[in-house]
Amino acid sequence: MAIDKSMNVLIVDDYKTMLRIIRNLLKQIDFNNVEEASDGAEALGKLRTGHFGLVISDWNMQPMTGLELLQEVRQDAKLKTLPFIMITAESKTENVVAAKQAGVSNYIVKPFNAETLKEKIEKVLGNA
Amino acid sequence: MHDKLVLDAGRFAARLDQFRQRYPASNPDLVAEMVHAVLGTMRGDLSATETALLGEIEELAQTVANARAEIAAIGADDITESHIPSATDELDAIVAHTATATNSILECCEALDEVMPRLTEGDSQVVQNVVTRIYEACSFQDITGQRITKVVATLKAIESKVGHIIDVFQQDRDQRTAGKAPPLPPEGPVDAAASLLNGPQLPAAAMDQSDIDALLASFD
Image (cartoon, rainbow over all chains, first blue to last red):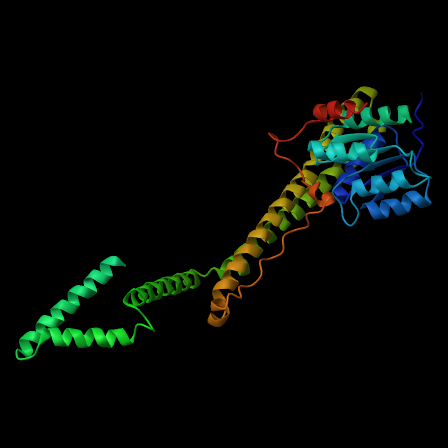
């Protein structure tokens, strides 16, 4: 299935450098409509007022973590099927299990490479 | 304590001999009887064993006082007032400097992204591959930042514990004897969500992407 790369993608991270890196990597694979948020609460506000086809979120943020954002998204009638990729340094089994149980679409551990990001996005959007 | 009692009994016998030599006409047995009678009147207050125990307690109190004085003398306040704040400031500066350097590198890469369309297809691909690798490498700043944040949290925990110990030793004597030690500093949150915020793992303990993919696949 062809992936619509004109969709809006929301990237969420409290490190501005990381947002910049992910934005540039997305641009390399032709995702040019990218918005940013610095924590889960800001992201949730944007998701509820905008139209997004994909969320790529860090986990460890304040005041709302990526996991809490994912849980809010899955409980929201309008957002519950939104593809959601977690990109995080949290690499313990309990973290992956918690994210999966909360409904994460895929999980990328930092540090990651561009190929992994591309592969996971294609897998998630191909299944959407 | 037993040795001390034996020593006290020996001293008593020596004093009795001295008394006998000084007053040869006196009856030592009568003197001993009088001494025991006097001691007997103290039985309700302190026995010889209790007196010896009191001496031991006084020695212990002196040892504690000496330890307190020694801790005060080594300037433990410096740890919380100077050393740890200085160390955390240095670590914060490392994060700030690496962020600045990383952003400079990213600006250079973005400049290369801009000129790529003007290159030949082959050159453009080479530049893009190099730029991609630089982007990937620059994510070190996020990881090191999180690791340093963990170290800073550890330093703050040590600062809190040391501060607590200093507080205990600086309490008023009456408060200490009344057992009113200051409360222990509060520990961090232990709720379920917080327990999942572990930060980056050391390479030997971390799962890599293939481990995570396998774990996710096990749910399907």
